[in-house]
Image (cartoon, rainbow, N blue to C red; front, side, top):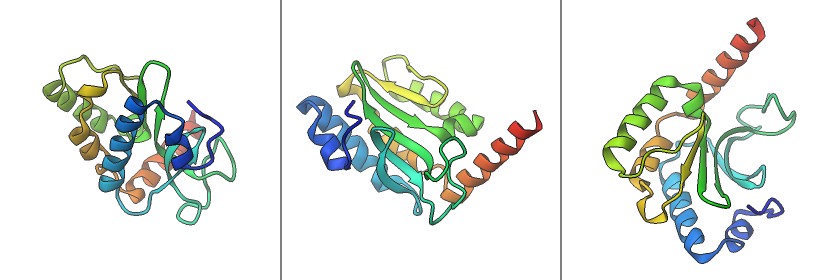
Length: 155
């Protein structure tokens, strides 16, 4: 929502109280479960979780010199968005997430290729987001990313 924030704390300060509480709790959940090696930052105007250049110097193909994005968390106009690139890179992970979401949450899942739209602040499945956050290690994500880039070159 605030693309000008330069720190996570500054980003959080711009949010309305109800949103701030939910985003802070999501952030805490992600940080508690995220495998070692990922780094929290502000990326593309959102709270981002990336593979730092110190771990993967090649960085992100679409933005040379920037770390490889993995997850992002943002407060949008009508929802909180959680972007998880692993859902896009690993179809079995997306299938697992969809099945688990349906078991645990009443409202229907609103999801794009990597974007989970959370519209009801009182029905955010924090435990499920925690489990999702820990499903892919940095090494597994880099491998999946490189495989996707190789497949893209072949086309």
